[in-house]
Structures are given as structure tokens and as C-alpha cells.
Image 1 (cartoon, rainbow, N blue to C red):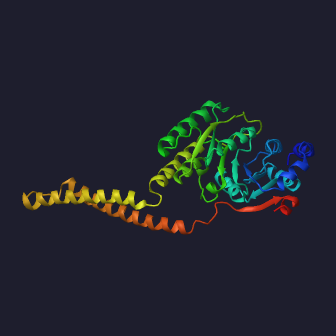
Image 2: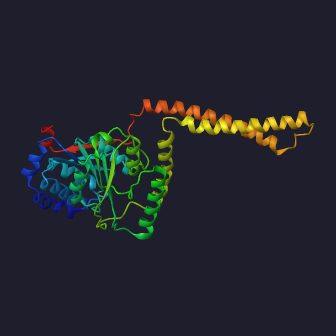
Image 3: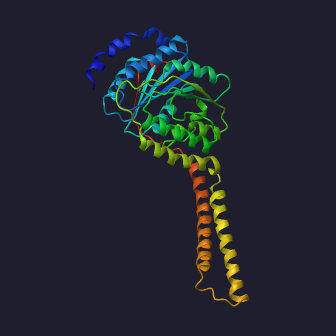
Length: 348
């Protein structure tokens, strides 16, 4: 582990009033701050301290949940040590790197707060914006999404792909959010705890929430340049997002009724095949023309068989969806360890 980080840990902790943290931890938790962590050892002490200070200055009962997604730079050991010494922090340590979506899902499932705030672990999101998100949520919304209006990222590799992806997502989902990729969001806990996430679906949470009938708002938030380490985002992730966008479109339109899409195309294909068959039958028996060498005969057979296959696939998909809804308790991650201070355990 980075020794300079550990040697400075006591100095970082001394900046926090332990009595203040314990007082807040002893009351029911209003807000859970969920932070996925992957190789952010240099950022963790500053981030945890800043989040705690924001909540304490605004007198908000809170907990911080850092989900370590299989880090290899010492983040795991640092989080374990911090969680043992702080009553406001829990470290959820995953068995390996599952990805940001799985890390967020783990955080949601371990959160105790009435409201869940998510933010990245790289110090680019500003915890000072959290009270603003909470105030907006209190206006009657179920989800408030941050908008990095003045984004501090590379133009070619980050900003342009992000703008294209956000435009496509808005068109497909019909949810008018400018910045789907902003991790700084506020959720009512009941909204996200029952969501089954996989792939890169964490960035589509506003669209998934909209499908569930949630009230959604967006507000500008601050964004800072990365201080430490390397970005985990790139063009490859953009392509994965676009593939998941197709999933979102299907979920929005046909999640509980896949037969409606596959069955419709299947029936249309079968109908076209039957019509061509009738036409060819008239040519053969009504007009006495040869049809054996006509391409239309092959097309009619292909359309009819394709229609049968699509219809059958739609039926199987319908049955699969019913099975899925009855057996969706399998998690997309495995937890190695949950670390928290003895004081936090006694307060439960």
C-alpha cells in the first residue's frame, strides 16, 4: 500500500470531530452516500473527509458506504483501516472487479438511509453539491440527477463521445436528461433497492426509474479535473453503453411483453409468405404458368419459415421473462467482507 497515505491517515482523521461523527451516527440515518472505489487510494482520505464535513456542517444524519470493486493499489487495505476507525463509514469489499454497475448495486443493497447519494471516488464530483440535490429531492422528486454543465474532461476521448451517447439515450428513452454519465445523483432509497442492475445499466438509472413512474429532476453540479490516477473511462465503454441502450429500449417498450414485438414481426412475415403463396398458386393453377424457377417461391417459403421462427422465439421469450421475474434474486456481485467500526455496530 502507499505508505505516505497510511502515514498521513492519522492527520486526515484528526480533522474530523469524532464526537460530532458519533453523535450523528447514533440517530437514524437520513442519507447514505454510496461511493464505488476502484484503485483510488490517493483520493479516498480526502473524499471521505470532505463528504463527512458536508453532512456535519448541514446537520444531516448520514453514513458513507465505500464499495471496493477489486482494487489492486492498496485501496482495499486503506478502506478496511478507515472503516475500523470511523463510525460513519462502512467498507463493502467485493471479491473481484465486477464493474461500476455491480459496485453501485452492492452499495444500494447495503444502504440504510432514506435517501441514497451516489458519487465517484476520483474527487471529480463535488460533495458540496449534495445539500442542493437533497433540497431539490425534497420538492417532491424521486430522483435528482447532476448535470456537469462545465465538464473538466478531454474533448476527443470523453466529451464528444459522451455528448453523442447522451443525445442517443435521450432519443431512445425519451427522458430528457443532459448528462446520464454523471454519477452524482440523489435517489429515494425505495426507488433503487428493488432495481436489478447489470452491464452498464447504472448510467441508465433515470430511464429505468422513469419506466417505474418516478418523478425526475436535473440540476447543474460542479465538476473538477481528476487529481490522481488514470481515468477508467474510454471509447470502449462508450460502445458498451450503446449496446446496453438497445436493452433499455427493449425494456421500455417490451420488457413484460416480448411476444408483442417478436410475435408481431413473425405474424407479418408469415402473412407475407402466405400472400406470396396465394399469388403463386393462382399463377400455377389459374394461369398455368410454371413457378418452380421463380425467386418468389423461395422468398415465400423463407418468409413463412422466418415468421414461424420469430413467433416461436417470441413465445419462448415470453416464458423466459416470466421465469426471470420469478427468479431474479441472484446478485451480480459477491461480497468478500463488510467492515465497520464496533461503535457503528452497537448503534444499530
